[in-house]
Image 1 (tube, rainbow, N blue to C red):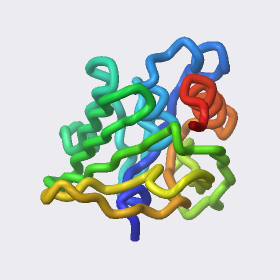
Image 2 (cartoon, helix red, strand yellow):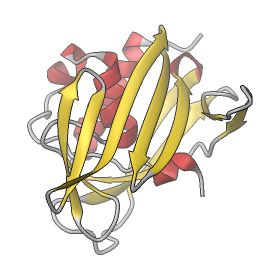
Image 3 (cartoon, rainbow, N blue to C red):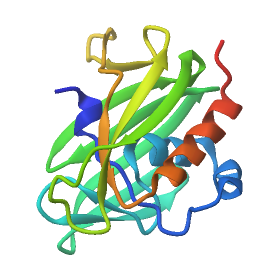
Length: 174
């Protein structure tokens, strides 16, 4: 299973309009489009929903049953190159996304999967050049990740797609 599949995805309550997506910093759009983290979001990383709180641009905390158990930091290291560091239950996952290599981002519903309402599963399909999604390794190399990650969030498909569209406008394919 890819690390991107392990990353949860978010529910962004009140992030409904495309205009709001276009006004958000790119690091926040990446958090929404690929992981689903945003202020007030609900995501599924287990049996109980995780409530997301944004602590700064590209930085988030997740609380499950009132206990902090998840963090996400998204950094834009160079224009359109994003490093994501996600911790959950003591494990650390790192992902590098090069949005300049992404040609298309599409979402499709993933069925109910017995998730608590209002959380729904989505599949993400990334089209583009090799190296658009990789896992940085400790030795300085990277390994490719699956181009079809999934997420479970309370965000609507329209909200996810608005964030993806704003990112693609900000980071055209090179």
